[in-house]
Image (cartoon, rainbow, N blue to C red; front, side, top):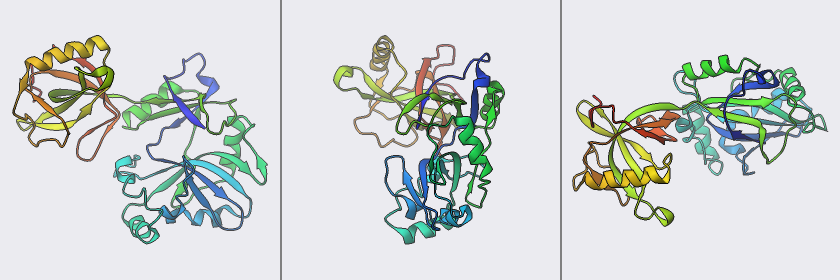
Length: 310
């Protein structure tokens, strides 16, 4: 069951929802046949058990009842927040068990369990979320590499402020009466991402294709540090057609042969501009190299000093 992007439920109806912290990891279904083994499958059904050997003891901890659990595999940063960039070092190792075992010592992962869809021979998908959540919490699944994070009913605004202030990715709002809908992106689960704003300088662009021919498909943006413009990523969404057309005209006027970034980004087909155009970009988080994750254009910023963000 997948969540639909949306906004925080209104205060008048927030008591109809439970709120969970949105994790930035790899979705996983855990199959426990009750014989001391387990199988972990990714969202698409791929068997990824061998990639995460630290999860194997969960089968022994769980006991003899068959079950299917839903959760997210994450890797934590130094401040205890899920870090997808860090997790990527562990992904894709299902075919290399020896390497996966070595990496488990260097980059440990943790399974955050948030639902149970089968338990003791009983299919639970038709039960409301509140009942499934109660059954999950009664299992008491807490271990070195797995746990059941808390959920709060109502108090959505307070939960939102908490995740925003803690630098977390966002919230999942789950309607208490909702059934589990396998394979469905349901409006009963709503993912609300925390979007941060960065002031950036446009240093280049990449031409669009198809309906965007003649217009910028994406702009290459940077941030000034120590007098240099450091590349922060490529932004390709967030404009209306009219805004993209205006931007194309501005980029044409600012064209230059020289790359304005301190280090030339490895972007095929890039065209450079003088670093005079300043804008605001929404993003969810940053990579370790300082690049913006999931950036979306917000607006040009005529109120900022042109290209001067020091």
